Length: 420
Ligand SMILES: Cc1cc2nc3c(=O)[nH]c(=O)nc-3n(C[C@H](O)[C@H](O)[C@H](O)COP(=O)(O)OP(=O)(O)OC[C@H]3O[C@@H](n4cnc5c(N)ncnc54)[C@H](O)[C@@H]3O)c2cc1C
Image 1 (cartoon, rainbow, N blue to C red):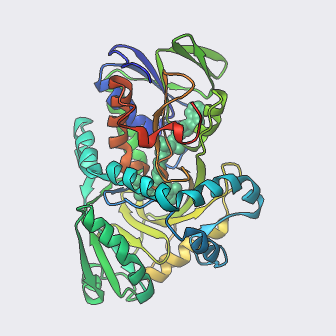
Image 2 (cartoon, protein in one colour):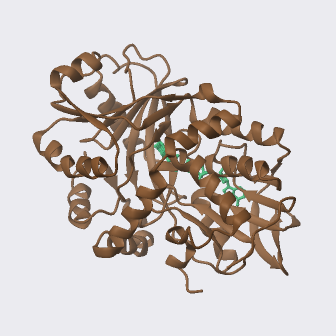
Image 3 (cartoon, protein in one colour):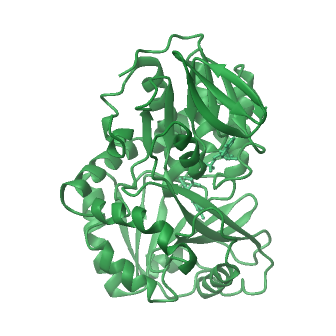
C-alpha cells in the first residue's frame, strides 16, 4: 500500500474522456499540479462523445447475472437480440467471456452486486454537486426514466430486479399502458407495462459535458496536453511516461484511457481485462416526433434520450474489440427500432455513431493503485455507466491518491486480476 500523495505534487492523467476530465478537475481541487493528456480532442474519440446522456442512479446489477450463459447463447441465435459477437473476434474474446461467466455465479456475483450498489449510491447527487462546482449546473436535469415492456414475459422477468432496487432504497413507480400513452403520446401503443425509476438525470450533450469539465479544470490550473502515451515506466519513486517522442516524469500517474488502458497497463506488466462493448446509436437532429423523458426499451436493449444534438436512440452490445470497423447493419437495426417505437420518424435524417464501452468482466470498474508501482493509479472499466459514475469515481480517485484509501476501495482493486 502507498502513502498519501501531498498536495502540490505533479500528477499526469492519461485520457480526457468523462472519467479523466472529472478526475483532473477533482485532483486540481485537492491542490495537485495536474497535466491532462489525450491523443485527441478531449471527449472526442471515445464513448464519452456520443453516449446516451443518462446519469443513472439505479444501476445496481452487474451484466453477468446468474443464468447469463444460457441467455447469452439464446441472444446470439436471435438476430433481433441486443448481443452480438463477430466471428472474427470470437477467439480473442474467449478469456474475457470465461471471466464474465465466472463472475455471474455464487459469491463472485454477490461481491459485484455489493460493489455496484455502493458505487451507485448517491451517483446523481454527486454529479449534481460536481457540475455545480464546475459552474455548469444547467447542463444536468433530474428526470425519472421510463422503463417500457412490450410483453408479459419480459415484465415478469424484470420484477425481481425492481424488488432489488426497492430493497436498496431506490424509488420506482409502476405505470400501466394508458398512463404510458398519456406520458409519451408519440410512442407506438405497443407497451403494456412501465416503471418510472426516480433516481435518474440526463445531461444536455455528453461531448459538451467533457468539454465544459476540461475548461473548468483548466481554470483551476490543469494543463491540457495533446499526445499519445505509449509507455508507463517506474523511475524510482516517480513515474515516467513516453508521450509521442518525449519522456516526462511525474510524482504520480492516473490512467483513464478507457478501453485503450489495457495496452498501457501491459507496459507496466499488469493485466487489465477491459474489453470493448461496442454500442451503436442514431441521432435525429430534426425528428418530427418526440419524447418527454429518458426511456429504456427493456425488450430491445435500447435507450432513447432527447439531447441538444437531437433525439438519440441506441444501445446493444457487440463484443468486437477496438480494431474491427463498425457494422452498418447495426445502424439499420437502430433505425428500424426507432421507427417501430416512434412512428413518423422513418424518413428523418440521422447521424450514426458507434462507441467502445470500456467493460470489466464483473462490471465493477477498477479504481485502484497499481500493484507494480505505488504511484500509478487506474480509473477504468465503467462499462455502460461511465457518465453516471464519473463524479463519484473522481472523488474516490482523490481519496485513493490523497488519503491512501486503498482498503476502503478494495472491491475495485487490481488485485482481482493480478498477483501482488
Ligand atoms: C452507445 C452507448 C451509450 C452509452 N450510454 C451511457 C449513458 O447513458 N450513461 C452512462 O453513464 N454511460 C453510458 N455509456 C458508457 C460511457 O459512455 C462510458 O462508460 C464512458 O464514456 C467511459 O469513459 P472513459 O473516460 O473511461 O473512456 P473514454 O471515453 O474512452 O475516454 C478515454 C480517452 O483516452 C484517450 N486515450 C486512449 N489511449 C490513449 C493514449 N495511449 N494516450 C493518450 N490518450 C489516450 C482517448 O482518446 C479518449 O479520449 C454509453 C456507451 C455507449 C457506447
